[in-house]
Length: 132
Image (tube, rainbow, N blue to C red; front, side, top):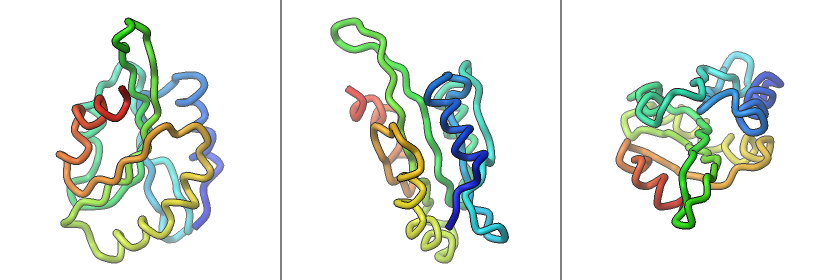
């Protein structure tokens, strides 16, 4: 499974320039590559992000989580989320599972990785806990 150049450049814009709050990727089975499905602007929040994920299909996503530490420092951590809802097709789950490591290697600077099969596994509290 390849990774579209646009996918890499969009991720770099999120990572370095803070152009996006999140990027959602999907596998284009015809092209056999990971492509950008949707981006969220810096003003969008975690609820906007989770609402953008399909309820019954797999996706990869990166989310730039901003938070303030106990020392009152502004920080940012990039999360990679492998979204694989339990109701999605077996073929889709297998395709995303087998392509994940190759895709993550293309994205330098990921701080945390989360595998989620339902929304509670990637709840904002889970993200906060992992970041701090």
